[in-house]
Each structure stands twice: as structure tokens, then as C-alpha cells.
Length: 149
Image 1 (spheres, helix red, strand yellow):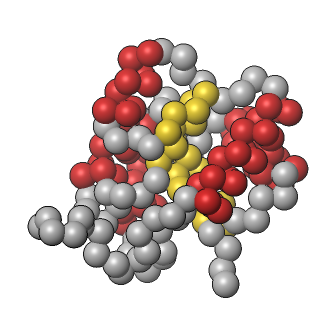
Image 2: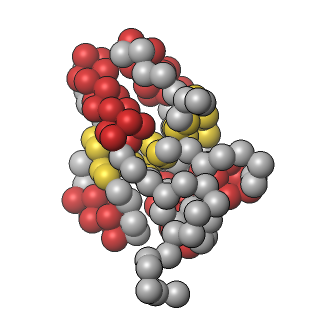
């Protein structure tokens, strides 16, 4: 059985390194694919049909060029990725950002913890839920609700 994958969309090299260290510190077993901006995230999630979809996307909002909101909007607009779990992982404390993220279809909104210890705890909880407990439609299965077209 292959390990689940996640896509981490993060443009800040320091935050990216801390996230990778946090996943390693907690021995999270998954394939982590990194997109460093919104355009790369869109290409990774919508451009390629030869890779299996990730179990979850961890998406920063404040990205250069195409921001996280636009990535979220485009992913939700495409039938192939409409049900893909997306967790907003951001330092934003703006209520408008939180509301807009949910309005656009985010599954969760997590503020980046300030301490490394808290970041490790957060990545442990994110991984436990989204990579282990969460059930989602499999690749190639019909995702429409029974009785609706």
C-alpha cells in the first residue's frame, strides 16, 4: 500500500522549512509535494492527470501572483478536484480571510502556530485527521450524490 500524499502550498522558505521539520519531528509518513506559489499549486492540482490526487492540500493564503483564495476558487470550480480536502494554513488573523476561505469552499482554517512545539502538535493533528481518519471519494469513483445528477 502506498503512503498518502499531501500538497503543501507555501511561498515563505522559512515557514516551508519549519513545516517540513515539524512533519519529520512527528514522523508523519506521507509523500509531501511542495508548491511555492499559486501558479505552481494550480499546475500541480489541475494540470497533471497522471498523478493521483493528494489526501489533503495545505494552502497558504498570502502567495505571490495567484493568491490562495484564487487557488481555492479554481480548485473548487473543476469537477476533478471539487471534493479535494483543502486546509487553509495561514498566519492571517483577519476575520474576512476566514469567512472568505469558508465561503469559497475550504474544509478547514488553521492559523500557523507561533512556536515550533505548537507547530509539531498542529501537524500531528492535521495528519492524524486528514491522512488517517478522513474518508473521501476514491479516484475514478463517481462523486455525485445518489439520486442527483
